[in-house]
Length: 112
Length: 346
Image (tube, rainbow over all chains, first blue to last red; front, top):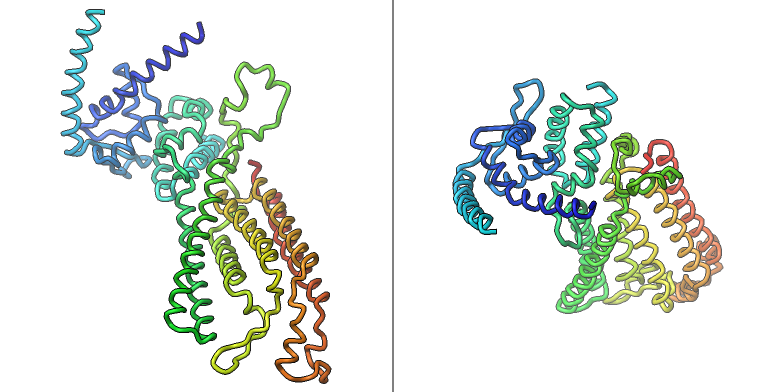
């Protein structure tokens, strides 16, 4: 029983991993700081560990999809991330891909 | 957040960022401070850090680690050391080859070919040594396994999970005291010394001794026993290499701790042992040094006040050995003192 549960957890994790970048990019039209992003994703039912999200944000920034800025004005410094124009284009493409895949998947699952 | 929580947070952030490349540490540190601060608004520090999990694994996610010989954790130290070692090796080769070439009155083309060949040999050797040391450290991850040093208790048997796999904020070691930090400057000096000394021993051992100008060329009367050099040289180089490996361990660990102390004790013991063999077992000194020298100077060794009169290889050996032991013991002493006084238990 435990083995089956482990297997299922692993498979779900794998499924989620693929959607992670798309979920994050979708939220980055407006500047957001990391923990606010964790919370807003969680509210929509997409749970993501902070220790996965923070390195991911840096990686997306390195790839030029996001840019970041330190906001020093508030009580403590915060780093805000936002999509770049390049990120907007990539996000648009990914979204299109996702919709095609989702409708394809839907058909597959209906059959099964 | 009270002081105790802040200290725990500081420790956690330190444990993550010390595993990242230098240029990312500041920014990631600030980012984590922001994150932990936000999370701690609704949860206790203990809960927050437990949720974030083992700092080593967290740092791993920040690095794009794939298959590699030397990973990003050691990479900037590796590059730094490699540059210094190659620069020192090249400088000493250029100097010895050119000086030797002109002193011995060789043709310019011969000097050029000699220098080039020596540069190639020493460059490859130096590159190999540095890479070997770092590759071994990469495989062993010597400094990062503090989790395994937890004291064993019977309770571990009662736990359902293996104790090495559970990470809790309780195992966070303190950020090292400023006095326990080993600076890059110390390593720089040692590395330069080791490389220069090794190059001289390999490429110009005959210049340890008396050098005379004779006609167009020069005559050297070596102090060292060059006829047994093929057995003595490897011993000396092994000792220097051990010193180099020890220095690299200090560099990547960055502070005095038990690993550094143990490595230093072993290295110095080995160096004393090798020095004793080289000096006492083998004919280390040139047995004909005095006779050759007096012959060359064309005078009797017994002239009044002549320093040659006092030449005695046994005394020389003992003095040299005593100096080597003294330096080794001093270094070990300082390391032990700093480790026990300021170092942290990893």
